[in-house]
Image 1 (cartoon, each protein chain N blue to C red):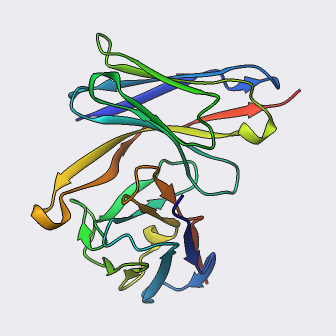
Image 2 (image 1 turned 90 degrees about the horizontal axis):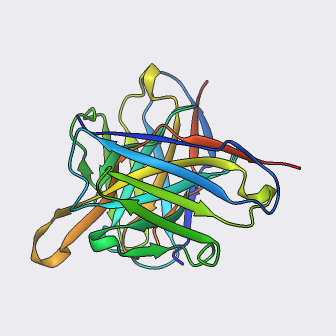
Image 3 (image 1 turned 135 degrees about the horizontal axis):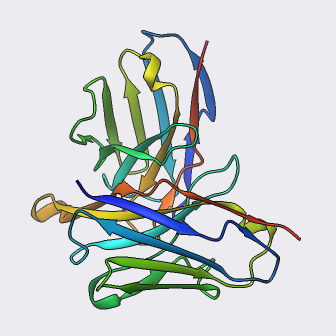
Length: 126
Length: 107
């Protein structure tokens, strides 16, 4: 059974860099897109970015200038770095797998997040 | 960005009730809409993808409908384990966005 295990620093000061790791166990790493998603306290989910085929990345435009997502395929791991954090970056950060299923010639491939890590609370405070 | 608006933001219901949650998008997304359930302290769990397809293992009391800009998640008979927050997510544009969530509480 495929599982995502994540870890990283939970308490940061303003201006520091957030670093998280997500490891994929029990399944294939290649062939999927791997995302980071966050949820501020009491708020909705926000997609941060993803890494996929051949290390290609895509980021949420609102965070793009501060985000780097990378991978180590030899270890089935991917990483999030978010620079210059502020209190607004306080959130639970999730790693997730984006899966696609072909739904015919009209709809093409439909995507959804079908596998999630347990989340890491990151607090930014001086 | 495609904006997602859910209503209501919260609701109170009793076991056995029929519950309906609505998600509206800022532009047409065909049926590229997913629904998730999240319990406190847990990661989201996929319930419905492509607006109406039930994810494997999800009880049949959950159903989804809609297309274009208006979508609905229905729980036909609310069970104790269904008290949670439900979120919609669009997969039309690859700047994936989520609704703010609807919290289903016990009446």
